[in-house]
Image (tube, helix red, strand yellow):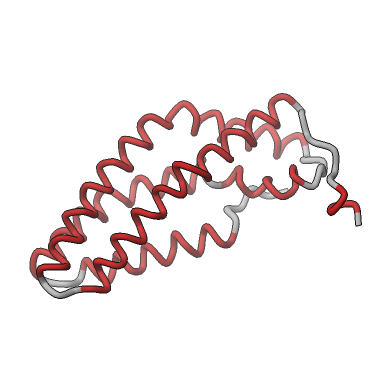
Length: 159
């Protein structure tokens, strides 16, 4: 069983990267601010894709009460433990990224780039989703795997 980032999350990350790349090619303060967001965001996304998001590939498997192969469980638990250890830094990075997005939004608004303003708001929402849902879910997956505490299959998964 491979730990591949769930397709919906990977597509969202790829879409955000593409929108940011377009914004970096703009001139003026908007392009400059977008390049600063990219400078902060790129290494953060790399970390997420390395160890924060792959454990989420097991969420549905665990929720259905299915067995996770031992090696996959060890790998995912180690990734989740790393996320938990690095979570304070990940959250500091989010704060810096959100600050840069506020600057981008202000520049884009002043220069008439409404699409960039919408992008900045979408990326801030993405960060909130990670903080409130995805990171905690990945940490819980790791805890479940370390404890070997996989729930009984729910009725909907037995049909």
